[in-house]
Image 1 (cartoon, rainbow, N blue to C red):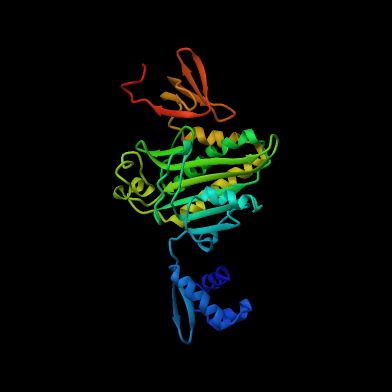
Image 2: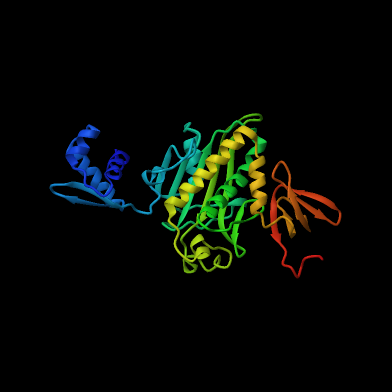
Length: 329
C-alpha cells in the first residue's frame, strides 16, 4: 500500500492529490491513507498537506527503502523483491534464512546497519548505519557449483560499472577488492548451498563504503579503508547509486546465464590494478609464500602469476601488490 500511495504522489508531481481521491483509486478508507502518510513521514518523506487540496510529495529520504530503490529500477530479475532492515546481524545470514524458504531468484536483502558484518577469510567488515550500502543478493543460477566463486568477480564488476556512471574510476585488486589510493572501498563475500551437480542458491554479499568521512572509520582501519565520498570529495546519493549497482549486476547475471562468465572476466580485466604488477602471494591453507608478476586470470577466475619457477595458479590467498622499490626489474 505504501508503494501505491507513493506512486500516486509521484504521479501528481508538483500538484496536490486529495486523500479522498487516493482512497477511491486504491479501494481503501481515507483513514487508511492518512495512516500510511504518517508512516511515510516517519520514514523521512517530506509530504506536505493542505486541508482543501490534499497531499504533495516534496522530497524523498536517501534511505535504502524498497519503495525508493524500486522506483525507476530497470532490472529483469535482481531487486524485484527487496527485504529491508534498519539493523541486522548480517545480510548474508538473513539471505540464507530466506533462501532456505525458497524466495525468488534475484531477491535482495539490504540493511542500514549490520552488527556482524564479515568479509573474506571470516574477517570482520565495518558496517555503520546510514553511511554505506550493505546488501546480499540471492540467486538460483543454472550454472554449475564450481562456477559460483566467479560471482565475486561479477559483483566487483557491477560496483565498478556503477562507480563509472558516477564519475569514479574503479580499481579492482584480485579477486574482488575495490580500492582507492590502496584503501578498501568495497568488500564482497559469496556463499553457496549446492549438491554435486546443482546449486540450490548462491548468495553474494556486498558492502560498499559510500558516505563515510575519515573520522567515521575506527582508528585501527583508518589507514586501510576509504569511501566513495572521500574519493569524489562530496556525498554520493545512496539510492541512485544502489540502483545503478543492481542494474549492472542484473545485466551481467543475465549475460552469465546465457553465455557464461566471459564478459564478466573481460570487464574485470579492464578495471584490474593487479594484472601486470609484481605481487606477493600468501597461501590460505599453507605457509606457501611466493612472488611474481600477475599476468592474467583463467577461466575459473584464478590469478595466474609468472614466477621464477614458472606459471603458478592462485585460487585463494592473500595477494598484495609489491611497491615499486621491491619489484624486480
